[in-house]
Image (cartoon, rainbow, N blue to C red; front, side, top):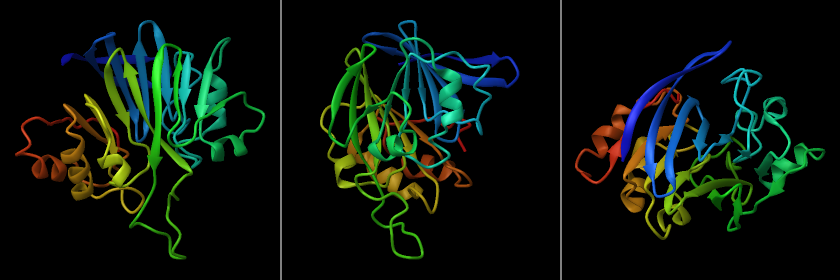
Length: 239
């Protein structure tokens, strides 16, 4: 499925590694910007996921055809980064809680369970939330219903962007094949390596990228999944 790895340099920011994935709709190039931030290039269109100025100087990055925001926390929703990426025809997809913070932005709100096709890409919004990991007051870091994960369809090839989530029942009950999955692994906010491994065993993605993993050692996940021969775990600079 992987065609090649590359290093792409954007002026003023340095370099980002990328993988090129063969999909049924053509080549998908995935740029690993950092943390929960990604950029995709597909059929001449540029898709930014959770762009933040903390991860890149977006005045130097390619303008967006599509922007996806998973939830309203500052390391995922950055109005300044979004503003740098807008051009005529840019479509922005976000949660209802995000829209409350950027009321002036022309954005499409997708709730958990919504399905859209935007800029030629199929988008399914899935729940992203905590069950076990909570704040000192007992409230989840990510309450159910506020955040989205997204399944993006490139042709019939499906790519899962987990968002900030745990190994929820909805995640583990996803129907249909997932060829590529990004799953978060950052304590105490998202999943332990064991939780990611549990979700991956249920989803069975062909390629698994742990992302948003902070100080968690991704090699623990590699070890946990070493017997899952159908899952290739790829570690990229997504701390």
